[in-house]
Image 1 (cartoon, one colour):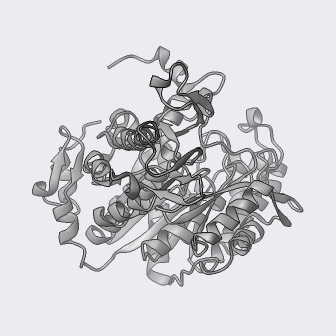
Image 2 (image 1 turned 180 degrees about the horizontal axis):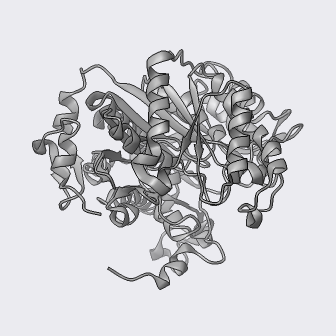
Length: 540
């Protein structure tokens, strides 16, 4: 594979070399001056890529997004991609890298998966600066009357580290600070990452961070980041991290990569800054939402698109035969074995995702993402079931055949964009009550029969009402492995209760985070981490 110089890639969407802040030959940031200069251009079309409920190996949303871009280039359609940045947690944990696979990748993939342009470092440093300032403020006299037991701002690390979920700090002598319980979360789960990705500009980011609630006083009054007087310090750390990054696919097509919140914990979309830039420089912008459509797509449609004043023109729903068989009862280790009965049973999962998405009045095309072990009978059976319901679909073979294997999907996407019209709207009204908004998602997207709140969550709702912040969208933290909050309930569980354990106000991000089931904001490593599997690789 031979990569092109990044200025040549940028030129394909009319971004001049003068707009690039280069990081070597193959990656660059795009200047704020250029972003501001194109703001008044009309928007192109927006395509959202999402998926059915995934297996633990993932079903290829990123691969599909890259393949679609390469396929569009093959049929001479100008387009650009907006993806999330990988987190080191899954890179060294369970999933490995997040830059596509096979013949459809974004490059230079190892740089992107690791330090890239330093955005994750800037975020982690900013998050921990805030934490350090809070503890120092208390140690130095506590002018703001902060209650150490009511600090809600967590420290962060861009790594899976279960031992840091709950820790004791300030141990030893009084010179070591105030002794208290503290917590770490993975960088991508932090509110600061959410703010980076939900902000529409650098100015918007600045106004949002000032509104972050970092703690409460002994009198239960909120303490904001602005009270700590470090908003400008955070901006200095985040200056370059706010600029979107441009790289290329293995076939030399332009891709923006910026921001990376998890969709099972946070809202799971790349930055609005990069998506909105893509819409200004290309007729078609492709973006993805993390995990299944019940998580990433719901949050994109109910939060990101609404806040960013975007109109998603088309949704691509990625389905794999192996995932359908898993939901139909096949064991994970047997997914390469043909099983038509399990495929037909698991098809219910695809149906539910499809009809959920249609509730937003956005056209949907299913992408059958091909794996080499799929049999002809399985492929034909899936096509037959889709045809019977009148669901538009395309066969995607990008992993094995690159852009050439992605032409069917590209043609189907262009056809849908030209012949169908989006009437996008959110699922719920922001001005509704917190309980009604949660119930709407739980019952219409997850198909739960009931929602049950722990006492802690009910107290949090009352606190949010006291702050007059009830009129915000809902971001539910939930397992990615099931429509329910129980990862073991596969396919389309019914008559289950969604268990709300706690609720947090992300005041700067502008949404309410609802914690359900056993979701954790700091993941742990698996028994055999991906880092260990790298031992056999050749160091370049």
